[in-house]
Image: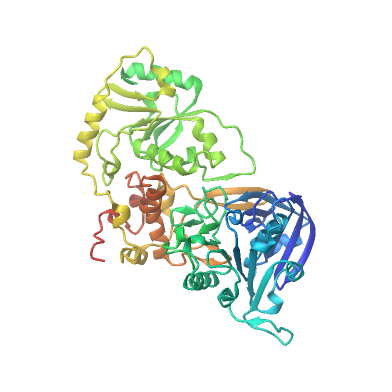
Length: 250
Length: 305
C-alpha cells in the first residue's frame, strides 16, 4: 500500500494521483493499482522513470472511481513493454484524449536525459476542457514542440479544431522519425493510417494497446493480441509486428 | 529408465513414494471417478476421472495475497491426456505464476496409459497415450506393470527388473491404429478467421463455459476482491465480460469468443509455443450441453470458404 500525496482534478472524470513512492517503471509500462475490497486495474505510469509515481485516471469502473477517494492505494508492477525512445533520434508522440499519461512519462524521461528537442507532441482532446495536463503542457511548450487540437472548440479556444491525425502533417521531423501512438482505438487506427500514407515507416510506428490485463504476468489469459499477451509483449507494440492481427483495433 | 514390475512390486514402490509424498489417486466414488487420498495402489482406478485434475495445480478459487508452502503430493492414475495438459500449460504458466509453479514443483504425477481407446477421444491426433514427458509413466499388461521413470524419480525403481521400453512404443503404435488420428498438421494455416463455423457454433452455444472448466489445458483465470481477500478463480473466454475494458469489448460477439477459444488452441499456442493446446481428451465435447465438437474445428473443410 502506498500513500497518495496529492490529488489533482484534471478534467471532467479525470484525476491525477501523486504517490509517495518512486517510479521504477519506464514510460509506456503500467502498474496494477488496487483498492482493497474493490479490485485491481491496470494503469499506465504517467511520470518518468525515477521520479515520484504519478497516475492519471479516468473514473469509469469500480476501482478507478474509488481510487480517487483513497488515502492509500495498492500498487504492483511495473509490467509490460515501454516506449523505445532511446533507439530513435526523433520521435513524434501522438496522444488522443486520456491516452496522454504514458506520453507525459515519455516527455519527462526525455527532459531528464536532455533530449526534449528530439520529441514533438501531437495531442488532441474532445474539447478544451477535456485537455489533461494544462499546466505541464505550458511548461513543456518552452522547450518541446507541442501541437494541440480539439474535436470541438469553444468561445475561448483559438487553437486548432480537428481530429488528431490532421496534426501529423505539421511535424518538423523527417519521415524517418519514430511515431508513438496512444489513444482511443478509432483515433489510433486513423492516426496510423494517416502516418503510413504520409510516408512514415510501419516498423517505426509504435502503438499502445489497451486490453483487460488482470494479472500482468502473462498467465490470466485476458489480454491476448493474437498469440501475444499485451501485458508481456505489450502494451507497447511495434505496429509492423501486429498490423495483420484482425483484433488490433476495436 | 524402463522397468517391468509385478503387482506386488508396484505396491512396494507406491509405499516408498508415499513416505516422501502425500498420495492421491483416482478412485471410484458414488459412481464417479474422482481424486482423493489413497493408501494403496489397489485403490487406484484405471478409469478416467470425471473432471480433469487441474485443481492439483490451479485451484478453482483461492486467495492470492498469500502463497503457503505446499505439501509434496503424488497423484496416481492421472490419464496421459490430462497429464499432457500440464506439460502444455507449463510452456506459458510455469515460472510465471508462483502458485502454479510451487505446486507443479512439488507434485509427482504417475500417469496410467489407457489400455484401449476411449469413446470420442482423439489423443492419437497429438501423439497418443504414451507420452514423451512424464514423471512416472505406467502401462499395465495383465498382472505386470511396464514403467518409464524420469531421472528425477528413477530412484524409486532401483533394484527392479529393467525393460527395454519397446512395449511402450509398440503399444502406442497399435493404439494409434485403433484410434485413427485426425489430420492436425497445418491446421494453424488451414483454419479460417471468417469461417461460418464460428457463427454456426454461436447459434447453439449458451455461454456456459463448461468447455473451459473441463479442459485440461485451459489456464485462464479471473482476479477479484472479496472482502479482505484477493481471489483468483477459473475463468472462461466464452463469457461476455472476458475482454471488456474501459476501451470497450474486443470480443462482444459470442462467435468471436468461440473463435478465440479455438484460435488459442490451434493457432496462437502453435505460433508461440509450437504445440496445439489440446490433448484430445474429448472432455469439452462430453460436457457441452449443445453438442459443440472441437473435432469439427479440426476436420472442417475450410478450403471452400
